[in-house]
Length: 414
Image (cartoon, rainbow, N blue to C red):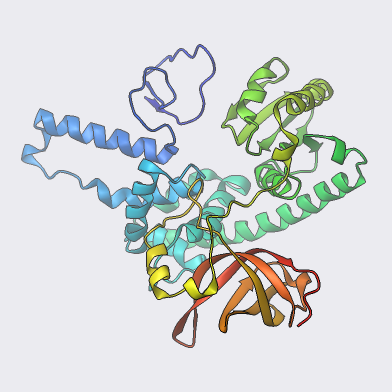
């Protein structure tokens, strides 16, 4: 039996029992399940069938809730929409993850620097746990990741987790090198502003990291991007796309040039013969020009509401805390405030900007990650897009605003 959650090719004919929510004959109402979510619902169905047959009369019935730690981990790591079934699974799975007795989960939390004394969030999974699990598959053997999550041996779990953490450090170094090379290639291109797509390849690039690099390039240039590694006469790689351009459909329309492809509207993998690359790039660009509105090639930040500083209080924070878990298609609310006076600014850590802003006598501390170039801002006027969170210092918790973007207003000297 095969379970799969990817888009299906036209005229798909299964050769064995196949469960996929994208099948036209599938009655399941939600198509956005991750691979692990699909497997979990299959387990629920099998349990129900065994229950009805009387299988559990002489033995205990398994409590599948104990597997929700794995379901939450896989669902967030797979970057599927955190809506409907996925949101329910992850919301319940996060608490199970925190209390998990699996040796592998415990060791993964340890090497990721996650303290189980606090709540575990989708951010922890997406940026700490998942990259380490994925590093094993990208640079080592994915079997070891499976062993980590299934072993009952604490010593084995610790060994695998430490190896995983080391591989993740190597993956970061490879990624940074590749990203630097891709950026340099793009900088040397005179046609980027005229192009609607980016397709780059190199025999020295690592296949396990091309998807991550493609994601970062899309964030920077907001164009459908394919990053490929060359192996003889075959190119393999990953693509990422933007809202308004279905990458899977585009690859389907160009499938006569491809050896293989698969994925989703926003992410896909391909293999293509070197001899077909030039024609592919030409037709891929033509599709993009036809299907992408130029307005879609400008990054957008959706604002949920304008919010004055006088409205930010513990009650608002409690209400916002009812909305997680946040993730794909269910982002943390973003607010707009301004004009605001900057009481002071300074750069902290690795190019992060720390501000204190003021409006109608009310002040709040803010942090803007990666925006140290805006310093100094003391005495100036700014508009900010921000999220509301908390900061704990010396045991005292206070409201802190996380700046998503900011604009310095003209003629803003105090």
